[in-house]
Image (cartoon, one colour):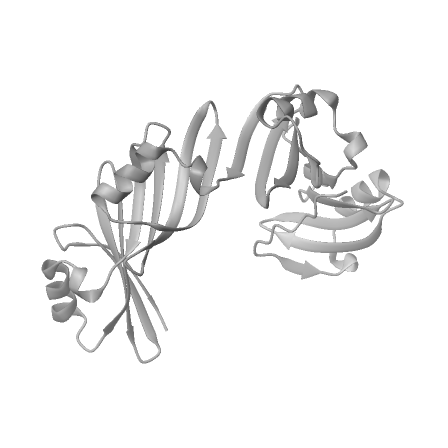
Length: 266
């Protein structure tokens, strides 16, 4: 059983002959028996994906050949007992589906994934068995009643698409997303049902008049393509995407209708 290393961020594929000798030699010295080797240049580092004895590895090296980060798949038998014991404190009975080991800055983290009743569980645990982070998908009946009541009272009935619990650094948060009156909403709550963040799609008639006035004055000929409200405990902002032909303008407004940020693309 493996953890497939599928994280994808912008990178440039390069051929092996374009890898600096100091980098390639450092790799060869440690993994001379690697197969299916693929190189990429990524943010100044060299990322190499390869296999050893049928297991996937991903290595990142700086331009001097020093290993910056190493990710590798694990067999279940390779997971330390102390890591499994930490998982059992949360989930007594489980079957590991994917397991990986991440080494970075001298620290080792084990990432373990599995599903129970089609709901995912993801653990990040250090080599001493300390729980660093835990995420799990929730069934509707696992969502605290206070959170459901808060949403219903202040926003309406949420048709839930996804619900997740995240525990990190001893704190628990709940992330819910779905639709209210056919409009997308996302919520992040504390375990005491206090809203940390809320975002929602807006219809044109829900955009404050002061913002519409600014758009009509400064962006004549543009049409509103997407409108979204984002709010937390300290402030609220409106993200508005405008379009005119092939031009696209994204604006961020405060509640006073003032433009806080803008980007334009052709």
